[in-house]
Image 1: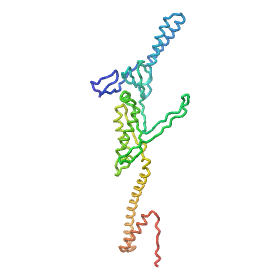
Image 2 (image 1 turned 120 degrees about the horizontal axis):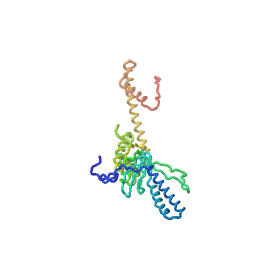
Image 3 (image 1 turned 180 degrees about the horizontal axis):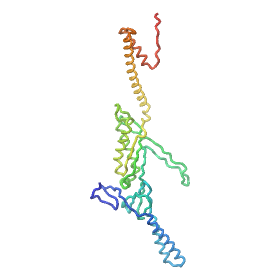
Length: 326
């Protein structure tokens, strides 16, 4: 809803001291093209007339015709699909043109090009400059490198993390007037939000089912999107999606954390093995007693349980010892 008392420019609105996008309807470029052609033809005709009859007046009239023709050319602009032009005339925002086609407006108007396409940004990604020759021709395109952000998680462990942010411009006036460079603003805010979010969660949750960076990537992506959407709304930018693209421990602690994960896995595996071995021993003793295969004293039962557990739990094959009765 637009407030009824909100001040307005010629086409845009100003709310809370901020410019908001407003539509602008320029002249059709195809309708003005015959006028420009007529000015050019008139200037040429006057010059030819002045040369043939040696009269200064037609030559003098050709000068303003030529100037008007050149000025009319400055008024033409094209809007491609998923693009827009924000028009500024002598410091006043006139509005934004989103209609596709050839248009014409005041030649002194500045026409700021803003793409409306969906764009993707990955934190830590950098594009090296292109290599050109002496003539300015690109001989080698710059290599795109990626350097994940190094931050500390909730436990203070250094980790490397990066995220992909999908965004687009929804308000061209805010994108131009609210921030100095909206593309750079998106990059800086994305990295700042990711750093802040990573410091509030564990890399691995100490509790089963808890929220963590590694185990809850979908939830972390949604929370990162919500935080970015709140930060970038004031710059006319909408965040469509954000996801963690890279996550790992920092190299200085990666080996130690790998050993901890291996130890945790070994302990969990041993617990399962012991639980299964105890059940098997219990079942074996019950079946021996039920079928009357043998009768054991308390000491013999304890020795039998020990031998069965050693056989079931040991990582190596058991080596039986046969008594010869000597």
